[in-house]
Image 1 (tube, rainbow, N blue to C red):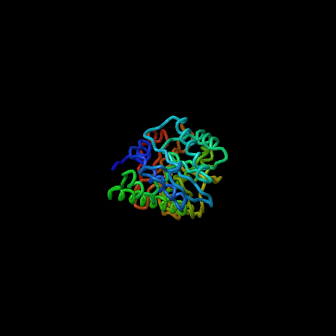
Image 2 (image 1 turned 90 degrees about the vertical axis):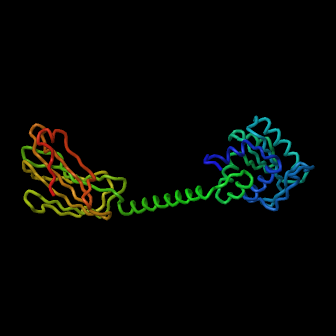
Image 3 (image 1 turned 120 degrees about the vertical axis):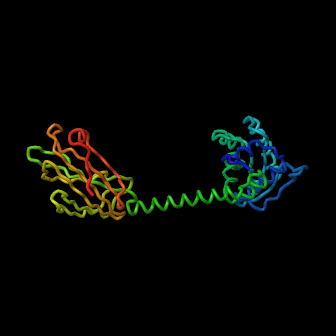
Length: 314
């Protein structure tokens, strides 16, 4: 038992289990890949007539040739083995060759072997390909029998838990796409005119990875103790939505904004104080979730030095 994720690859490449075991493993691989009527020759030794097995696929007669040395060999050695096995295609009146090997073959090398085979169709089952096949869940018993790789109950439990977590994350992502997830938004004013004591830009800024749906907001002037705006905003896909306004501002303002959307509700407190030196109204804002947890807080530069730390109201 090993926790190495690429154990299948390593045990195939450093093959020490002999020819018989490699031929029987290759047979299981071909059967998995759609070959049928597979008839082995002599995996335990004997004259095989230039073939390790005969099988059928696509209405053709295929020969199986197996090459499982220990460690990676030079390409020329691999090519010579393939060319030697190809001789058995004609001598056995076959149509094609399935070459199963534990050797790494680069794309260019695979193309070279295909070219070397000439008019004889070949299918190459090289190291990476057979590793992928053997690592499939349905090949667990074959992997255990021929490579000695097994999953303990603990590993299986971990696999199941990992799968459950993946499903849960996918479900949460789908729900977030449909509802907005943990995305929220907040309100800010920009583009101040100190002469007219107004702000010209009204912005709703989105925070999060998902759109917001069915957004409604209500703004309350906490100093005057009255609501001054209520609006259904709808869907917010962009990072921010803007309105052009002439929002009248006193020297100091304290607003509370109540947001409601498909994914829940939250409140925002925003303090605005006129600063002649800054040429604007400096802002301090705090967004709290439904149970009062702080989800976002921002205080403009110079706010604290000019007006002190903001005091949030209950």
